[in-house]
Image (cartoon, rainbow, N blue to C red; front, side, top):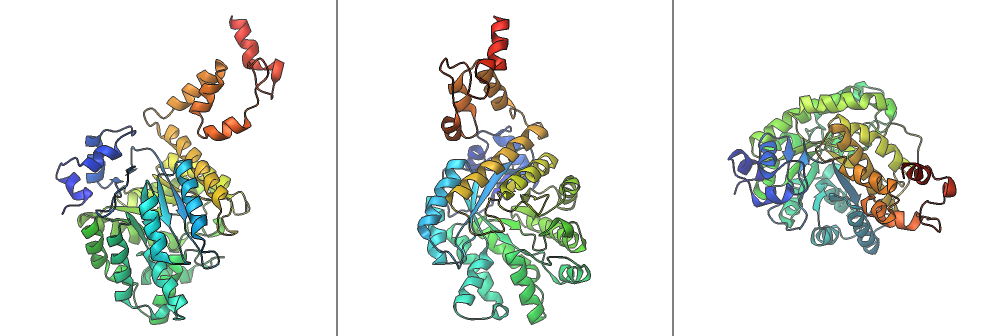
Length: 425
C-alpha cells in the first residue's frame, strides 16, 4: 500500500487529506501538494482509527502537542487518564506517550484507544525501561531488540515516532569538542550515546536507517527525527554538536522522503530569543522545508515553575519564523511529572503561542476570532466574549460583571468602553 506521501505524489487526494484540510486555510488539493513536496505531513498509522485528523506543516495552522505518560517514580494510570482528558479538553492536536513506568504496552494501548487525536511515542523508552526493570545495563541492548520494539509499536498503531538517528559517531565527536554546561539533556539521545560509547559502534538507527524506513513505510508511520543534542540551557545553544546533528537530520530527511516516508524534524530546546528565528530558518533550509517540531523553545533558564510561559514566548517567535508544531511545556518542567492542571495550562499556553504565530504568519482567517471578540467587547456582549475566548470556561469563572451588565469590576462606572459608547450614541 502507498503512504500518504506516495498518494500525494501520485496526484491522489485521500480521504485523510480531505478530513485534515477541514478548518485549515488550505483546501484538500493544496494540502496534497504540500505533502507531496515534503513540506507537510499527515500522521495517520494504517492501523489506527481516530476522529480528528491534523496535518502539520507550511501554510497550515500551527499545531500543539501534549506529552503525557508515566515515570518510574509515578506510574498512576488514573492520573494519565485525567491528563489525557485535560489535554484534549484544552485543545491539543496531538499527544505523545512518553511513559517509562508501569505496564508500558497497556498504557500505549490506552492512549491509542482513548485519544481523539494522533498519538506519538519514543520506542527506545520501552526498550530501556524493560532493561532497567530486568537489571540489564543499557549497553547490552541488541540491535534486533530495538528494531523489534519499533515494529511492534508501529504495528499497534502509533502515528509518529521520535527516533534519535542524528546521534551518530560524527555528532558525538563534535559534542566532545565543545564545553557544554549540560552535554546531553535528551533522554533518548543520552541512551543512544551511552550505547555507542560503551560498545564502540555506530548508532543502529543511523547505520540501519533503511530498515527503519521499511518499518515506517509499512505502517505509514511519520518519522519525527529527534534532536538528541538539543541544548538544555541557553548557554549551550547553537554550538557545533547541535548544528552537526541538524546537518545529519537534513540528510536523513531527504532519504526518508525519497523512500516515500513522511518526516518531520525536531528542534530545541533552550535558545536565546535573538537566535530563535535564525535557527528555524536554518532548519528549513537544511531539511528541505520539512515540518519543524520544537520543544518551546525556552529563551531563559530561570523560570522554573513558569516554564509554560517561557515556552509560549519562545514558541510564538519560533512559530512566526516558520516552526509548524509546538510541543507544550508545563509548569512542572524541570521539577517533576506534571499533573492534570499542569497539562491543561501547558496546552493552553502553547495554543496561545500557536495562534500568535498564525497571525504573524499571515494565515488567512487567523485574526477572525480576534475581530469577533473585539466586537463583542465593544458591544459589551459578555456571552460573545465567552464564546470567542480561547478558554471559555476560565472566562466564565473569572468574569465579574457590574449590576447593569455594562462593565466588569475592573473599571466599573469608569469603563472606557461604556463612556465612549455613550458619546457615540
